Length: 139
Image (cartoon, rainbow, N blue to C red; front, side):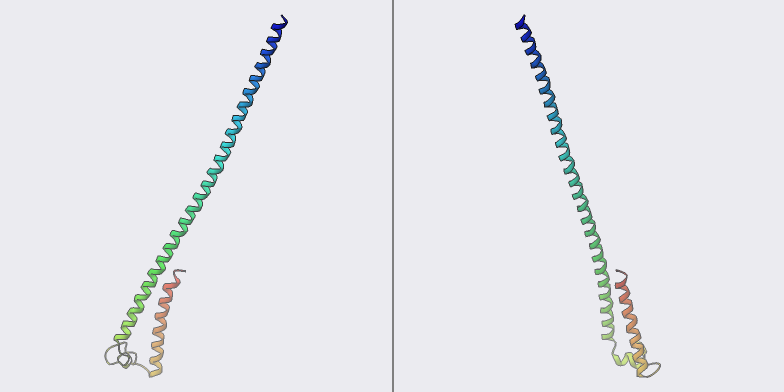
């Protein structure tokens, strides 16, 4: 009977050890899963941050390209205006422009040389303001 009691005690001890070992194994697996979940969450957060930074950079690049294109088109417009003004000045002799001989601006119609100079300066300033307005609207 004593040997049967020792065997039952040994069986009970082994049963307790088995249950504890199983419980500890389960806890270890839970800890590993929690660690894996924490790492995965951190990687997802970092990936989200990278996506936000990438989309911001792309947005800034698109906005910058639009700004450059707008400025270049305005610059091109100003270039053609200046080209037209230069062509007009080349094709309109100063004597005809200032002398009134039937063509040009007829700037000599009223006043002397000082008045003609003032009118020319006024026309040039108006042209410059027009070009400046083209650049100012981009800022």
